[in-house]
Length: 64
Picture 1 (tube, rainbow, N blue to C red):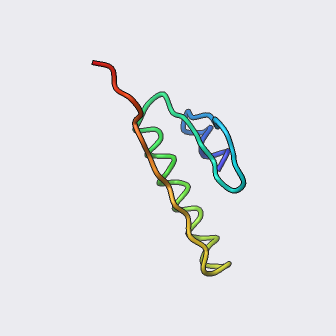
Picture 2: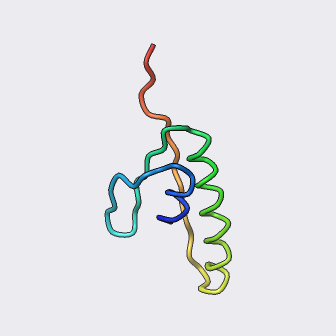
């Protein structure tokens, strides 16, 4: 995931266990990274069986 996040302009904020929190200056880059990660993970999950990946995007607070 680290490579995909960095390749799409993001940075890892923190990790806790198997969870990764990443930040992207441009929202669409975060979505692109999420799609790439899901695609790559799907290929591995088929071989491993029964593993799920969950991604929860958020835009954070908005200034008015």
